[in-house]
Amino acid sequence: MASRKQKKAARYDKLRDVPISTAMSKTSIIVDASKYIEELKEKVERLNQEIGTSQASATSQNQLPMQVTVETLEKGFLINVLSEKNCPGLLVSILEAFEEVGLDVIDARFHAKIIFNWKQ
Image 1 (tube, rainbow, N blue to C red):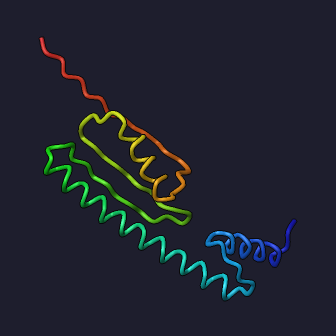
Image 2 (cartoon, rainbow, N blue to C red):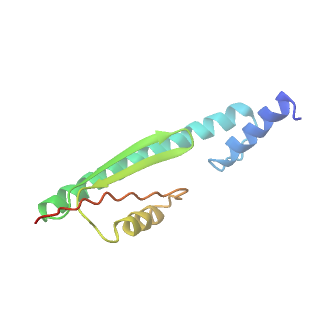
């Protein structure tokens, strides 16, 4: 079983790898990680602005209205995209957009709610 000191050292090594830091002191590792988190927050804000801009232009072009939310999690982000209408290829387009900006998608889930209207 690893000692508490070994576990802590392993955590610092993982933290150093996240922002690709070359720092050796614990303080420098934390500072580099904090800067990296700030950069990610700014990137999320820019993406939210771009999404808002594209939503405005999409709505003005009479396209599908969508709701996009972004939550910061402990180990990444949770991005929800909700659309009331069927939009073939939407998931692929979203994944391609993330890839273009250098984001790695670790888990993608899709849920479709189908409503049938039956008239006699």
